[in-house]
Structure formats: structure tokens, C-alpha cells
Length: 199
Image 1 (tube, rainbow, N blue to C red):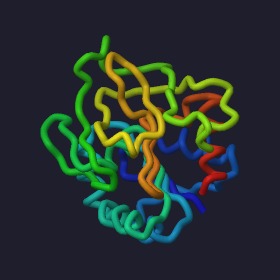
Image 2 (cartoon, helix red, strand yellow):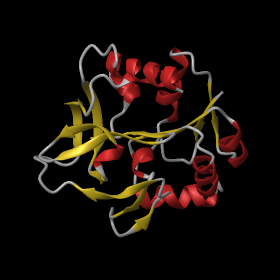
Image 3 (cartoon, rainbow, N blue to C red):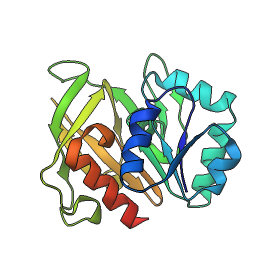
Image 4 (tube, one colour):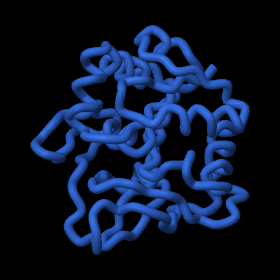
């Protein structure tokens, strides 16, 4: 079973619909016990890092996600959900993240326009990686003003937008997409399908 985390910071409908179409059988939960029990946890997210951390902590989900990660159980983070995986964010201050992947979330400095919104090209570090197999192209959909800075060993794909930033990351069972696969058409669907086969 797949659970999508409801912490009042994500477009749950579009994510769950995309997962359903690929046979994931998702349910939506804010129950910390479910975070530990199910096969795959999806952490979506739209909004401010600070508010996301506050909501996760208030609902008991922050520690549940950290515990799940310590058990090497799969978690997928999407957009803000991916950013929450990192050590800290400098969005409107300095705030601690889940610290599941070492790194910091910072604002674009050289982007032609903020937010980075629309279609852009993924540049896989390894095009033979199973996550990127059978893709019709590499164009995916982004909406964000901040991005993660992390060690290259955790990066599966980059994207260029005034500066190069990680668009897909992985550390063990923790996988994050800065882009929105649920809004990325056939490419996003294939990536989610590939992910399901990987797990």
C-alpha cells in the first residue's frame, strides 16, 4: 500500500490520481502509524518550508518520517516534499529539515525569473539508470523558487535554470523530485512507473 502524507501543504488530489492511474493504490493519511507501516510513503508539498515543518511536527509526522527513513523504508518527496529531506532551508529565515539527505535549500540567485515555473529539461547523471528508462523525452514541470544544494553523489538528475540544480535525488530508500511528476505528462507517468518497478 502507498500512502500520501496529508500535512495541509500539498495538492493531494493530483498526486493520488496520478498514482492511482499507475496502480499504486494510494490512500491519504496524517496518521504517524501509517507512515511506519505502509510500503511507500509519498510526501508532496507546495508552500513555505517553515510552515511545512511546523505542520509535520504538530501532527507527529516529522519524527515518524525520520524513523521510517532509519528503517530504510522508501519515501518519495515531491517539490517541497523533496526539499524537506535536507538538513536545513534558508527560505525566509533558517529552518531545520528532516536531515535525511545532507544539504541546504537556498533561493535562486541567477535565475532569469522567479519562481522557476514551467517545463524544463532533466539531465540525468546516468541515462541508463532504471528511473529514466523508456522516457519519450526529459521535459518535466517545475514550480519553485528555492532548490537544494547537496553532494553530487546524491544527485540522479540536474536541471539548468540560470544555475544548475538537483532535479532528482536519492540516498538509499529516500528519493526526491524537485519537479512535479504528476503534472509532467507521459514523462512523469513513466518516471512514476519506473519508480514502482524499482521498489
